[in-house]
Image (cartoon, helix red, strand yellow):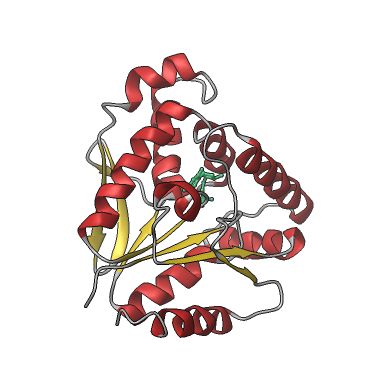
Length: 224
Ligand code: DC
């Protein structure tokens, strides 16, 4: 098998992670959820009592952050200070903080370095905001996945409900739009469609349809 990576970028709730998981299983390659890393950084700031937008304070701990990405039965586990925080980072309160802390250049440089190391070591599908535009500009396959914000809020609501968190639809929609704005307006490596990425609007598509569309492109890419 040739070495290749697949970049899936797009806003929150566009279905990237579900699609990425399905692709990684189908192609038997690693799935790297890069958002989990920013969420872990946000959790660390909470633990230390540091403000997420305070670059001076965040820069004091970010370079030495004890963050590891492990895989158990093919599923990504995010390990912070030796503790599995994979569930804790999914709490709704962590989402906006992750968006805030991810705007800091010192945080992005650290996480991007880790992401590049993992992507170079084995074929993987990475989901994030800046994978095709900044982390892996030479990545062979790039997709920009999005959906209408109401559809995304509904999906997010269902996902949170499965975890026992019940959040009002309008609140979620507002939060999603606020995060879209944050993520696409930060100065350094914002959420952006790479010029050579394939655009997919998943509002009216099933997960399987999106996966099939991507598999078709990868199949034609002469890497399998
Ligand atoms: O994909 P997610 O919702 O778990 O990501 C959480 C936050 O992390 C998101 O609001 C923006 C940020 N993020 C980023 O800036 N770059 C990435 N590659 C992935 C996530």
